[in-house]
Length: 323
Ligand code: F6P
Image (cartoon, rainbow, N blue to C red; front, side, top):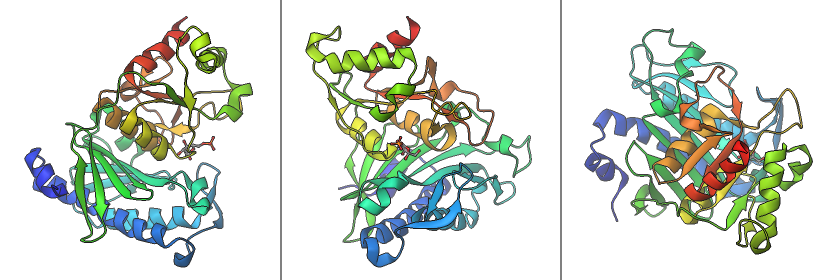
């Protein structure tokens, strides 16, 4: 099985850029080890703090953030970093070519139940027209991303990565400590009979979402003419990994639950990297009617509605929004 570095080299990725990806992955291996030790590593449970989003921080959130932050700030390819767990942009090496944004630990509510969790990251070109620590560094549309990936800490630790070409999947080989290429090209089936949405929010949904999900549930007796199954991991990495592996539609739509927070998932740390990974595997990713990768961000911690997955199913869903 091919290793990560020769695969990236064959893709024409520069040595400096490969080293940057390796830096992020070094932190992921440390996190994977702590996760695999569970209770024994002393990282389960909450801290007494809340993050910028007003959510209780888990010890593993804090540890993962610190690990990735420290390792990236020591990399001379990184001009600035932004983390879901940090209020502001943190400046790195002046004049360096790239900026990195990351969600250090996605799906935190799964930590204590030994469920799927992950690290999501994205790399963008640094901007010379704004200060290194300006939030404007990160106010670039997702189509500017030069690399997107996640590491899924599940029964196996898996890396899913694109550097602009195909979305490839690697598995962490614990016997030698490296990522091995296990799925050279992920291809999301165009059609699906599986959807993922948090049904507990249904009373807050807007009409379009309600009509679409009702039709999914009607199955072969409804207008869509086929029976659907439902899955919900409560960790976007887990849900998107399933969609990348066998198809499906994943939705976290906007709703009226909290007028101050009309959507849940973050554009920079979650929606954009997942949208790039999915599009490069033949799937689609939208925020309402807009392609996620075209959105011009106006805030570092901006949230967007999310609708992504098997291309034909996303089209069906979009038709409800345009009616
Ligand atoms: O944004 C964090 C996150 O944990 C996602 O990974 C996941 O899809 C979602 O929130 C789960 O939300 P809920 O708490 O509504 O199940």
